[in-house]
Length: 78
Image (tube, rainbow, N blue to C red; front, side):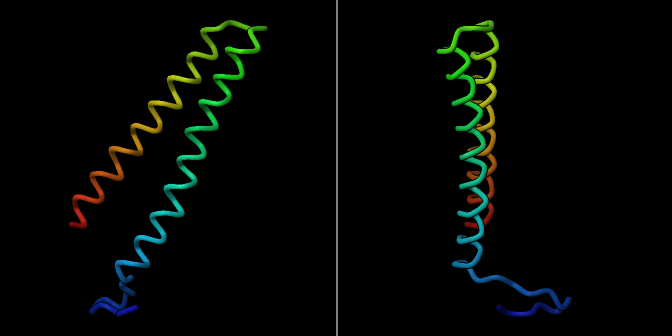
């Protein structure tokens, strides 16, 4: 790690990539977990199917949102 003029430490590209992988993994689990909950609600069928579909759609939107954020961040780094 190098220190900048302001005294902050600068991470290497490998360290930044490792941290991004850890964060990305958590967000992917969150998105797929929400989608799995929606799928469970649809299959269970005790309540409204619309509730399960809502969970499925919100999980998909969450995954697409994080995809856009990651692509944007990757383009900034390049």
